[in-house]
Length: 194
Image 1 (tube, rainbow, N blue to C red):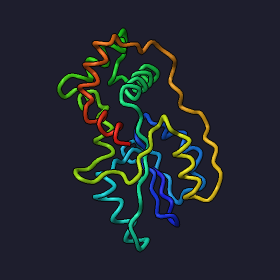
Image 2 (cartoon, rainbow, N blue to C red):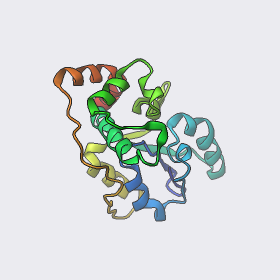
Image 3 (cartoon, rainbow, N blue to C red):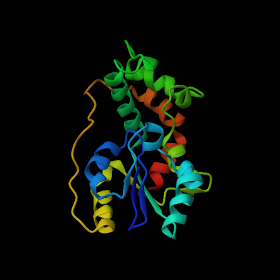
Image 4 (cartoon, helix red, strand yellow):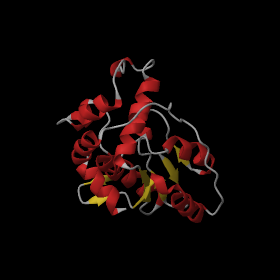
């Protein structure tokens, strides 16, 4: 999470949607950069609205706007899979030995799969009841997001390409992808609304 005090703007770091690159590029411009631990770095809109937003709004004398990125849902899950493969050595709680992407996607699509796998859903990160992040940009349309930030911050920005997961087979058969897309219906609907 990045807080831009003068602009009254907060970047919420959606997991697996380019947040590390954004934070790396903008940390020096932010009034506060919360990058560790992960629960604080990836504070969702619910946490922001209930805890962080009211506090910083009171200190700054006005409400802050929120901005975040959202990745195409199936591609987002592919990124999680690649991340888990790379992170397997350091994360014994999520062993990935011999787990294909098809199996990973199938596990995610099961009832309770997102929470059981510790991944969650993007819509739960970006929406809190009737409230949602003020500006959500599609990760796939990164230039529009950068243009928005440049306008808000009044400077030109360059984004590094970092935290790139390994290239692996993330193919799904059409039927498997259809099952996954149905399971991700709420994320799909939000993504289509952007």
